[in-house]
Length: 517
Image (cartoon, rainbow, N blue to C red; front, side, top):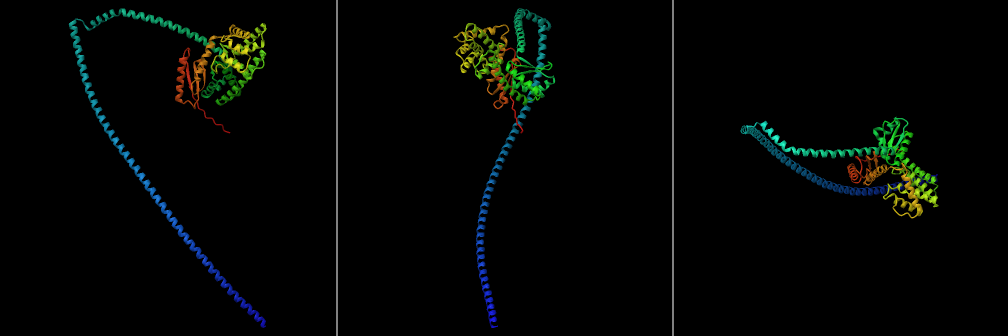
């Protein structure tokens, strides 16, 4: 029992001691947390005071800057207002001065008008007095001379007529001589115009191509809305389209056979395609130009095959094919070259010379004509340079240089080519001198236009009666286009001889094209 009591007492004492220890520990922990909180609060208060001071200082600085800026803006506004006020004052002074000047001018005009009216009255009074004096003088003269006014006039006119008889006779004689000269001049002009019309008809027959249409309705589609299709065709091809009452046909007119052929193929392709509008026209034209290059090469290859000539450079074959679209005095240049080659080959065979070399020289003797409209120089000089460039035989080069007598013939084949050239050119109906002059004039017209700065391309149209010039819109503006037309007109008048008149049309067009994808 005592042990139990002792144990219980010890437990009770232990509990009391533990409670005391826990109380003391909690008190110590509470005091430590209070100290930490006080320190944190003090630190926060100090930091807050510092931030407050910084914000106050910054606010003061901003307030000072705003005040300075506002003061400056106020000064500028005051200066502007002062300047505006000065301008208004000056304007008011000018208006007042102008009003005063106008008032003075009005007063002067009123005064002048009054003076004019007064003078007019004086003049009318003086005229009345003069008329009165004239009547009195006439009456006095009639009474003194014994002649009336009508009789005196008859006498004076008779004396004048007698004095002028010789002068009138001389005047009539002079006018008769002038009339004879005028009649002679007019008769010559009539003859020249008649010859020109006749020459025009001949040229037109040789410089036009007829395109057959499936129906007359196609003419309207080729013309297009407000003529936009026909304008596009003429501008890109350089060929004049003649659409008249001829049923199911249109006429292409141009001095350049290559242009006519390209235009013909383009139009026929458009008719088959059915889509005729400016963009499609340009697309078909570009494709036709590429196809035409292949066709030109084909012409050259056919000529070589016909003559049995081999080993020719591809570039030279293309130049030979271009001769198909060149003429010499109305004679097709490629057919002429083939004739010369055949004749030269036959004669060379008879004389025991190299027949194939003679044919080669005959075919190439006019090769310069393929590009003589593109570069400077005669076709003889250009052809010789081309032959040297493509390493042709020296005999061929000499035949080209000497076939018009520009240089000495060193070989028998050169003489044979010159003879064959003469035979081909002089056969009946081979050449037409008026056509060659006509074509040369059209070439000269286009060259004059292309020499102008800013010109993109130029086409001689309407048998040389119109020159259409397309300029680059990024280089030539609307005002400068008038100057280009005037400069071309002046050069044509100075450098060319031509019948009638030539219309120069300068076209400047800007297109903006976008493609939606």
